[in-house]
Image (cartoon, rainbow, N blue to C red):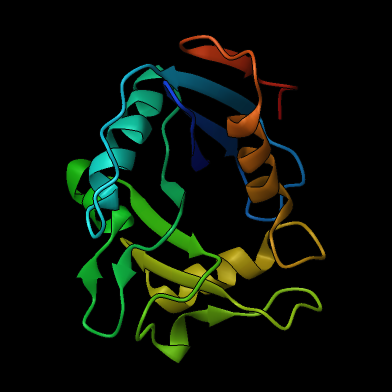
Length: 180
């Protein structure tokens, strides 16, 4: 299974959303989950992962599904010197047991041209970085994802999930829509 995650920060909490799906071309998720995190570390420039990683790990604790790949909203590696980003820290926290693909919407300084992926008719690329899977293969996976626009359907969905109001701790929104 594949998991896409995103985190939304509010005044007094963070809300992390996740969508689980089976194939890169899936239009709908098999499961959606939202977890509220009551205490979140302050943002420190250059240490974004210290704020985001605990949120993602909290969501992973709520899943009972074996995940082969996690898609994060951001970078696995930053710039041309491959400094570790959120995705690399997640990969290491999971002891390399799960591949991680970063999908960023904005370029980071010195991001290699090879990380760029144009989807749909967009003239603005997504920036794809990965660990546990070859970068070129990761770009193929994201290119295959459902949706005609720049942002794949399920990545839009996970963004919407974590921005929803009225969440509760470990609130599972939808599980196993149908047996596949």
